[in-house]
Length: 496
Image 1 (cartoon, rainbow, N blue to C red):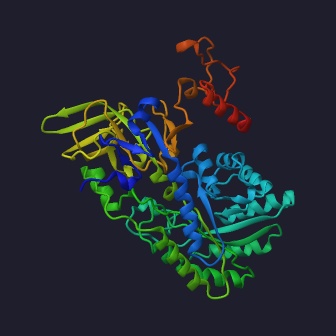
Image 2 (image 1 turned 90 degrees about the horizontal axis):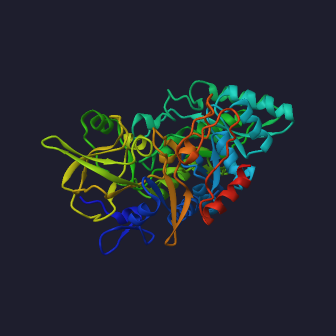
Image 3 (image 1 turned 180 degrees about the vertical axis):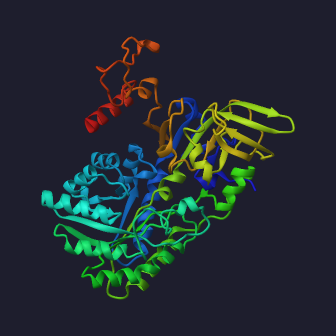
């Protein structure tokens, strides 16, 4: 079955070239070079607003939606999502700084993660973020010490590991909620009760509720609700300890409608034998997830108590609203063996997600051509693991053609590396106009943090890698045009 570009928010012109919001993707590749990420700005905002609206309409109590920065922390993308009304969920000092400097108020930020250093926690307490999601008893003790030291109250949620395994995804993706997971306090081992006892003794720490996250890319709409079968026990335990359950954080894990993670068996067949799975059925509307979650909360807590629900979407907002353009530079045929499409983007820009996820790929020209051959699409590195996809069914592709990898909006830029190549630009399309969100990396960017004993090394155009006297200048080179100058001035004021 031929994939349909319209399922991905794309249209075709009369020559069957892919269009995003009326702009030819081949024109974007020509103007900004490849590889390049292209963001559907208006669709991104609509999807963010739709998620929040549907979540709120499915539940009788208050609902807060916090975007998971870890899925895509590109400042220009976060700025669009903030404009759509979503709050922030962060897991590092970088992400906290970014959120604050993009204009989020501390009360709009919740902080997650298993390794919050003392310095990071102190900043969270001092900033008065809305909630710190506590991952362990040891972290709880550390928060109490910091809060007493500066005499400032801290609001927390307690992350609970429910020991639940969602279906239709691989074991790595459900590590967050299995019994062997390092995240949160164990539901059945007495750790929840121990943590609540600690909070009861702490003067400056206020318990507001629980956080229950079960994985990423959850494909079955009832899995979040099934994991909440523990809610009756948790609610009862909290009440016995003298606490009111005011907030329940469901976490994230909501899927993209147009990409998915491979199951255990699919990963085994693909990585061992090169059998690439098909996309299969869509996960269904998010309203079904929200409806079942609301019902599970009602059953688990009972009448008269309506806690606030918090959701932390990431990929379900950004994934489907970004594509990655790669140019095919060589086509190598080996009779009786296989065909390789050798592209300029691989291990650093795309390979990590496609190792365990299914993403559709279209040629940007003649997008609906019949897919007659199996090809290996690889990247530019001299490394056998630099593979975009093995045995992907594609039409006949010629050198110079541009390919569009769908759903590059979640964890592509978050996991990218250089691997000897420059990291790509990111461009947004809004109302038929292109806008640069991140320029492509340069040599100076790549070595901007490096120091050498020698002071006489010179690269092209007289650029130097200096010794210990070298000053690092953030976003150097952004003033190449008027638009770049404006971005440079803006971020110079933000970064300092």
